[in-house]
Amino acid sequence: MNQPVAITRAVSPRINECELTYADREPIDPARARAQHETYEAWLETQGLRIVRAKDAPDNPDGVFVEDTAIVLDEVAIITRPGAASRRSETESVASVLKPYRELKHIVAPATIDGGDVLRHGKRIYVGLSTRTSDAVLDQLGPIVDPFGYRIDLVPLKRCLHLKSAATLISDDTILYNPACVHDEAFHHVRMLEVDSSEPGAANVLRVNDRLLISSSFPRTAEMLMREGFVVDVLHYDELEKAEAGVTCCSILVS
Ligand code: GLY
Image 1 (cartoon, rainbow, N blue to C red):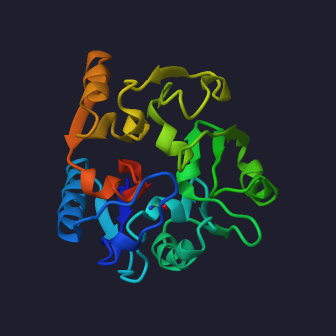
Image 2: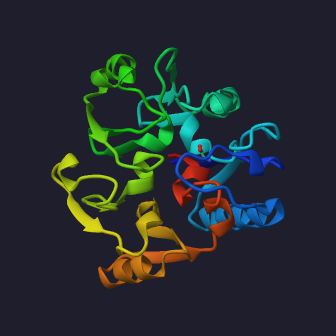
Image 3: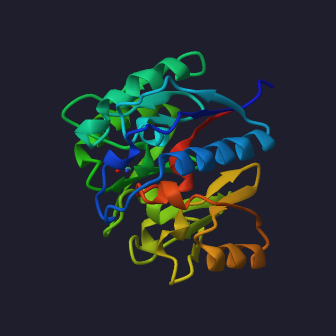
């Protein structure tokens, strides 16, 4: 089997100009953000993933958040049209990296979608209706994924940047979620675990090889996950969180 790959991108020196939707702007230390990102990449390598960095994009403040530029399924990769105009020029360089691994399809205007709004569970694709993703995208996404047997469910969101800010898949049958942002009834045939109520950002957890990576900003949720029997690794990620990001945002996993 080919070695699985994690696509990442270097932190832009202009990260302080990143998009913010619900978060207040706080100064970001680019050197500290870079160091945290490198630790994140090193963790991915310990999980057997080969890091493939997309071309540097110093003029894209949010370019490190590659997750939003593509939706990778087993059968096809869909290059998104991000909801924030400032982010649309991020996609081409990620498409170049993905090309050897998957057939590429593209979302085109006027529809928009961010990869952070897409959560796949088996043959269900949940699409969060955030400020970045338009329901018009269904007309394009449906014909791409229908032939492979996927069904798409739209998920209403309350005050969170992306669906995966509020819900991530942490095992084959479990979703970790923040009930303040998304209703558990939006999800089907899956066990729902709530984040600790004092840690609303904790639902964004990265699952690789049945290990979970969570930010050190969310110790109570991390402890709860360990009590539930999950294998949990904790990463300092607070500098990148100031850019309204979570741990899934900085990679696209291709196996
Ligand atoms: N700063 C992350 C985003 O708004 O896309």
